[in-house]
Length: 333
Image (cartoon, rainbow, N blue to C red; front, side):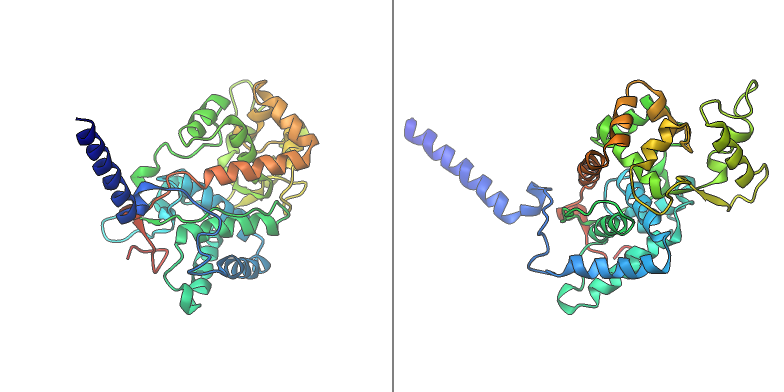
């Protein structure tokens, strides 16, 4: 009986080993920093050079690429599904109303970086668009003065992209803390992660329509949101008058709009958060201590941001038969 039981255990063990050998990609979705060290060892430098070239052409490269990464990861995971163009009867993610304001420079940055990678014969069709977007985001952050960090790699590109999947997946400018926490928690992110990632607005820009109600028609009693600093509100009303062209956009951080820094938190302390979803981080007593802490400690904020964006990059990673490496980031193979 003992010998039969031992033989059974041996068979089970060998079966498990065989499964791991034959299907390694389906048994682990772990990312690693040296994923391309054999197939495309210089990929970091290639992507960085392409992003730097684009960044020197226009600063919009930075906020556009960062926002593109966030919008990608929060819908079906970090799989470059946001890059896909609509075709035939399929309306893709990028054409959902919440994604129409994504700047073209973000998409162009990834496409240019992909072309640069594929121009190297040994790297051609070896690096996913999802990984290129993750690396380009890191480089955009560093080029605008933010922290440089090693990116975990090994994502595959998603096999589907539909506008319907975007519904309810992205934070809105009017969200309160409970709504923000709920949405981020659905992606495995904590309140501190959420506050750190929100600080990417330090180099962001927004169309006037996204916050018009705060400066023109907040409530029956107050035309202007009382949470806004009066001087800041007057400045916003001047830049975004009623019936302004919907294409007009302004910097979210008027003090250091081209520097990735902790001034975002200092602005919140002064009532200068552009969105209600920004200002609530200071006004709600549950998140206020974190805002105050990072407003006073840039180093602590940078560490927290690296941890948060690394964690974001692990959301919904595709491996095995759940994805592939696209030859064109904007179209399925």
